[in-house]
Image 1: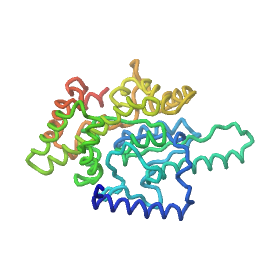
Image 2 (image 1 turned 90 degrees about the vertical axis):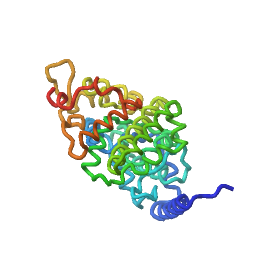
Image 3 (image 1 turned 30 degrees about the vertical axis):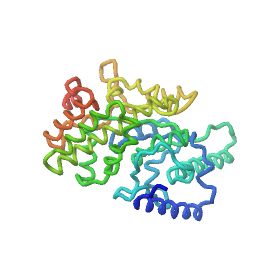
Length: 344
């Protein structure tokens, strides 16, 4: 019989205690009956980009229930990891029925359905469609595939420049932030590498070795965080390709010059017969004509940053070199500079 590591034993015990608290606060069947297909997830690395995307989605969808970072808000408090970031989780392809993540999301779906049914009792027009349940989450991202498979939910993945996302994390939380620390270990586990990087394994391991050979702890920490963000976003692209009926990608690089390229991901995310709602999002969001054929965002996205506060020029140059050389990012020379993005 395989011996269970001490850390896993502690997590299993935490999950056991958590399930007992759930049964006491709600009912024993809570979190088992909710329809995961009612859930619309917006997932991505924490930063202004995903926050702005969520704002764009919420403005033209009045009949919707938005929940920001539901895992952090849920009570009783979740503990998915023994690391400093309690909401971090290694890669999972499957979730058990009583896993906290599974029960939490289903409880949100159950509550949304109950609220919708109650509101319909108060309305004369019973044909009003149920409220959309939209949740933006930036934690527990390595459990994304398990959530897609278990809940059959719809997911919208926001991806952006890994270097700028890392700069935002460090400037907001400091260089010693625990955010994505566990993920930095988990993306190098064999099950993750075999699932998402089997064809690029040699290049990924070479990039990791380069990072570990850097002279200072600060350099290693900065580059490892950027490397981890790039690998998570690579996972998002792979999942969108493997589960096209459930998951779509919103890539800032593509929609920056042509916001209408967001229409297909939105239709796929919102479900059948949602073309009108997706057009409403694009037409009423914060775009404005700039004298060209395309329309540009009017709010500040992370890509409009033209200076770094925490990362040095050496950090940025080395990060792009590692990402480009190991095919985790396209050639930066073909992209506009940060100053050009601001001037346009």
